[in-house]
Length: 137
Image (cartoon, rainbow, N blue to C red; front, side):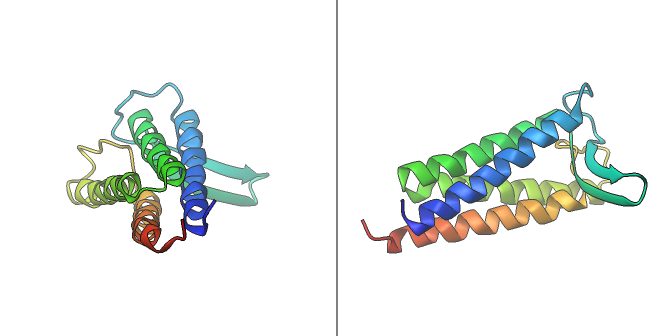
């Protein structure tokens, strides 16, 4: 497995893990609830880690995009990684548009922390899609 494929598999695995955790955190809420639920870590009211917010649709979108990243690692072709990068970029753009709109149309149940994650994943998959052409066969 090439270095680029390992990076794509790592990004895809992280995205898949976060998507599954987000789906579990969304629980029994509406599939497209405007206000997603956070998954948090709270230990005896001393430490709290608030992570991303998701509704079930947002978590499923993340799982599908991460799956495309894993497919890119398996196929060693740039197209799935580019599609995953574009999907994460659109997801990040939706967060910005939804916040401007007052969260009345928050399709993915996302918040500002999702913005950073989506931008990072978009940049990571875009860079690895470009780097595929430099891999040795």
